Length: 280
Ligand code: ARG
Image (tube, rainbow, N blue to C red; front, side):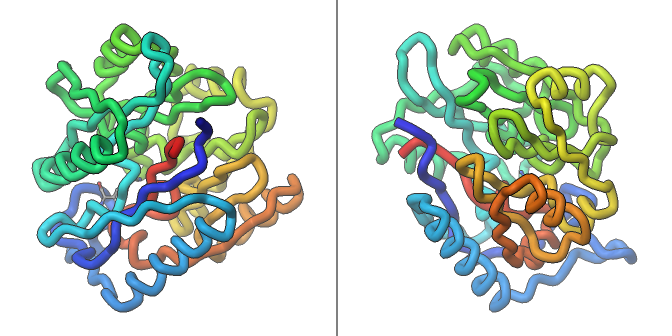
């Protein structure tokens, strides 16, 4: 079983209905307005790109009243359970009440696909693959904590499932999930937003990745480069338009697939968090 599939959720009811991160409002503090039609078009073309890069896609229905369900990286966490020798799922505990009701839809879906699903005993917050990124190549979980996930949850994950955690504190509120400032591109290469990490965090990252592509902070804020997605060490899917990041990737011989996620960036998310990568 290898990571070859993505789970996505249709943006049928996508909007910005509340603000739980700094991107969801405009300069005057008003909630961003989503162009629904454009959101459907962008999403469909993103899903087509996933398929073109060779991924299997599972499409969930959207749910009225749960606009952020489209960010399917957040409600669950697929990982390798050392004790059972199987890929299994841990369900998230969302930081905000607005998103809590998304999680049961994922529980149902995973069970339907035959996965073992675990609930956390820990009562604090854990936002799934937005913060916990399992790397089969390195055999560890890169575990972001701070804004959306509590550090304590990683103790339970390591004790219950034998996971080795690389804890990474997230220092800036604009980079509130690990997947906004860190993206694994291959065994040796990762893209990072250096300012988002502590000195210790950066040292840990350097010890795993001989090559760290540093994203200029303004470019990351504007184009969500840190939220790019590389499924296979070769193809990188990223929001269109970044002035230097895409060029940097091309120089490193990655094939860059530029997509439009502008409607979803109004809610604080882009390519990586619009899907959940899992072994199907
Ligand atoms: N509006 C969503 C939230 O704030 C966006 C989530 C984006 N997800 C991500 N993993 N970066 O929860």
